[in-house]
Image (cartoon, rainbow, N blue to C red; front, side, top):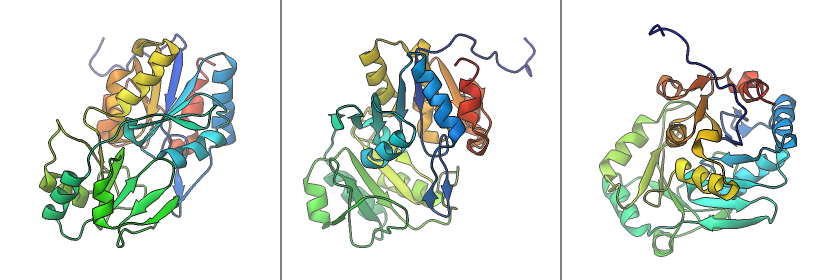
Length: 282
């Protein structure tokens, strides 16, 4: 095959479909999340009508992920949230798995790297507990303010460290200020999983936990191999599940390195790329 030949597209239908949310089936408009388009909802319904399960795999917290899963018509199945640290059973409407870690060392490391850093933490389904200066400039479920001592004292599936950012809200590029914060904190990979976001965010989770481990848990439940799983995503935190899955689909507006890691590049989220790819099989 010539070096510039396009990759061969998967012809056989998958036995499990996994979808990211933000930038994949929904997007931000004026800092508000949109709802999935009718075309995407119809495509997801066709997958399920064919007897193939659809899983949500997202960096969002569980409570934020479930609302979009409902919009997609997913009345059962699983949501893997918080970069794989949380799992929610849509039929039971309950957390089905959660991995946690000790946040204290991470908080101290971030504060040493930048005294202006602010924090939010995810505990169960309460919403975001946050320090006093954490900017609540996006739609979310807010549980309330918490002291640093209280935030550090309880194990959590996810900690967010945040600094000011010049990045456009919803940007596909990692925030350079957040990258410097993460580098300064220098958290050990053996102790934490770190994801640098686009808007001044650094997400911290349990070691060895990622979107790949999240979808692998769900695939095991269904008895489906990675080779028979198709995943859709648009961001750097999707790269682990791209590497795990038999067929990875990047959205057209994704950063170049994300598109390069995929087996296929779909049209953008604004062009209903997920629906157009799924229509090949369902």
